[in-house]
Length: 102
Image 1 (cartoon, rainbow, N blue to C red):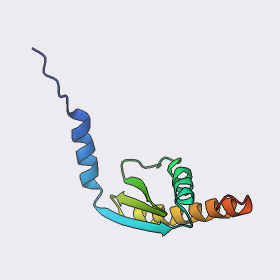
Image 2 (image 1 turned 120 degrees about the vertical axis):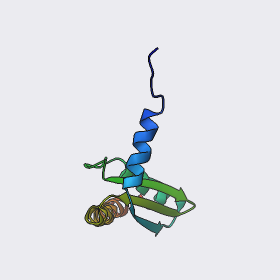
Image 3 (image 1 turned 90 degrees about the vertical axis):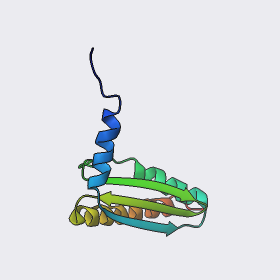
Image 4 (image 1 turned 30 degrees about the horizontal axis):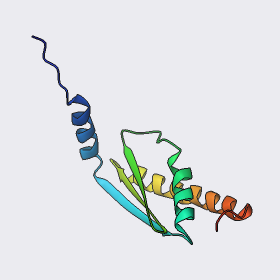
């Protein structure tokens, strides 16, 4: 009889999430829910280079974009948060330039 572990992926995922013990939540209020959703879609496109060390989740409620960041290291958490601010600035400037932020 061959024994297999049907839950192998979930156990790896649980271990991965347990190692991400540093967290940061960023909340941004926009003019409309559509702008918040557009910004979230643009920011979600890029995958993390170090996927085993950081996790991001995006949630849009009404006109508020909430980004939860979890990381295994404080330095990586700071870099990811800073990068999100920079990317959001570019997204908003682009939307304003093309008059898409209504």
